Each structure stands twice: as C-alpha cells, then as structure tokens.
Length: 108
Image (cartoon, rainbow, N blue to C red; front, side):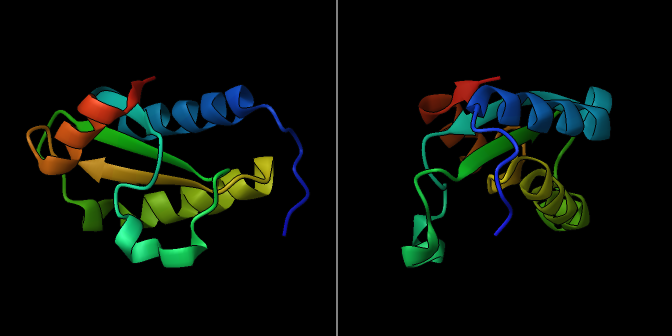
C-alpha cells in the first residue's frame, strides 16, 4: 500500500478533478463526489470509508467501457500520487448514475 503523500481530501479531490477535466475537456458536463460507491453490492467488504467515488457526467452520450482505460489509469495514478483510492464512474447525461449523482452527490 502506498504511503499517503497527503491526508487532505481537498488535495485529492482537486488533483482528481483537474485530471478529469483535462481528459474530457468540453465534453464534461458535471462532476460529482458521491458519499459512497454507487455499486455497493459489487464491492462487498472491499469498500473503505476513505475511498472516494466520483461521477463524471458527459455532455455527449457516454460509454463507460470506452473510458475504462482512462478511468483505471486515473485510479492508479491518484493512488500512487495521494495514497487514496479514487474511482471515477462515467455517466450518460440522463442515465440512472447521473440522477443518483445529482441527488446524493456534491458537485465539484
């Protein structure tokens, strides 16, 4: 496990948001921080209270699988840089994940 280089969540969120905005550019419509995983049934006991879950809602219709390469590399980069597990989920503008993010998340 990487030693945390910072324990400030604000630093972690700022770094994650910057990288996400750089990657998606004008196609990023909204970005949210969720209080927990949107898929808790998939994580079981592996989820940690320190894990961060972000939802990137794209302006154009999103295909999460086409962005899997970016999101998985981003998770690894942020973990190495900050010592926090940050998972980025990609959402369609009108999809269920976007609705969940808007109702339960904090807009960044």
